[in-house]
Amino acid sequence: MQNLVPYPRHLIGMLTPSSNTVLEPYTARMLEPLFPAVSAHFGRFRVTRIALDDSASDQFRQEPILAAAELLADARTDIIAWNGTSASWLGFDTDERLCAEIHARTGVQATSAILSLNRLMAERGVKRLGLVTPYTGDVGARIVANYASIGVEVVAGSHCGMSDNFSFAEIDEDRIGQMCTDVAGAAPDAIAIVCTNMRGALVGAQVERALGIPVFDSVSTTLWGCLRAMGVPTAPLAPFGALFAGPSGSGLALAGE
Image 1: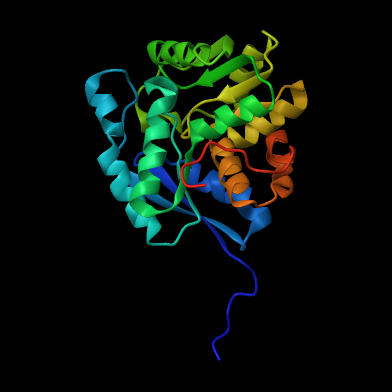
Image 2 (image 1 turned 90 degrees about the vertical axis):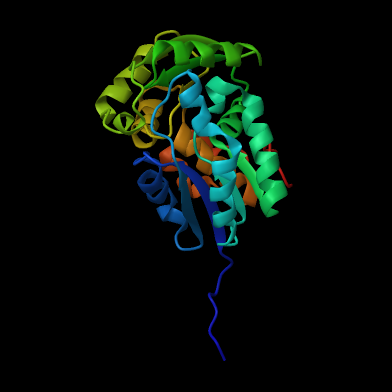
């Protein structure tokens, strides 16, 4: 008789920008307390530059993303997450439509970094936000405007002025920590590190403990959203941020629930 794995497996599919070198290793690091019962699996599509012009925006057309999602579905994932933050400047509705289409194509429930972040902020009552990104000022301004449209005021922002997606991963953790400290001076309800190719997950948790202000890193919030959607307890990941130590339950914006 064939031996079977003696525990239920929870399989997360994550859609990854092609030039991203942060989210895979940082996600794997955060999942270590749940290994081997929970694992993340990645599919890539081409994203190399973040800007507001048409050629940059075209990188986020649905079809290449959906093709990658269909391949992830072959791994029988329990959920598929778009692990990128494009909806923060393109509009939150772009992720809502994408997740609905992923579910329609694959039959797998779907969420994203930004849908998870927005749900988390709504749960925690965040109305005043500190924003940290590697992006140029015009991208940052678009993010500020989108959050204002849902009643969240960005009270302080710190941006690196960069557009090359690969280069975001080369911003060191000390600088990210200082950016968080800088925006903390405005006394926000929370700080969001918006970029899944920025090394914010581990240093964000350190800053949070030092300042007493919640820090929501994009890689962390994506994982939080996936675990919550699958009903997997997040408390074992509490050392990686207070978001994981919060109340249990789902309540996420998902397609396919």
